[in-house]
Image (cartoon, rainbow, N blue to C red):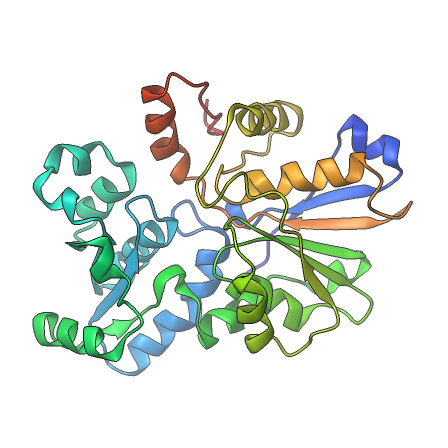
Length: 309
């Protein structure tokens, strides 16, 4: 079973609050398939191979970390990969695709990209649409948007290790809820799991409750999404860059950056008991920094430290 190290986060406001904060460096598991994507794809790839599939198909946005991880994993396993990408305007703009780090790398790894309208993309969960895709592309193993299914949750249950039982709180950023569900299922009896959604809306709680084996050991913190998925401002950029300078830990702006901003703010405001031991899960996603920086350049905003500079 793959394990990742825990790195202590030493910041003045944390020490002043009398708590300890650590990050589980899941982002170090693999240079291209890191964090929760490594966990989510592990058993899905085994299942695809066991059932004799030669093609993987999935869905995602133009900057999706899931798209980036899946095409690389497929390449390693010798599987063809197809990405159904939200935004048909990209089909006629090869220049935009070329300057998009996620999509250009996917093409380099021989992923077949199919750009569809945002309206059609909403049908990604419907059997009729999936059937049409099978008619067009032939048989494929379907990996859902974000990678979350029962096998993905099983993989995410392996994030926590025996030594992590010493922590009082386990914290994780939330997209589709699969990673948090796996952590809820594997958390110790006295541990509290906190999820930090990157999207607006209360629907995630229901999604997680439907999948998790427990209902009494977790809650969502909905106040730090910065306006919604992939939304960002100068305050968050400044925090991410200062955090990197202080800890040497790079954060992505969509998930872990918002979670760590929230945690430091909560610690500063004494929302954790004295002597609490907190473990935050670094779910990866660092490949998305390049794409975000391209957007920030156009808006003439500060850029995000990438960890290799």
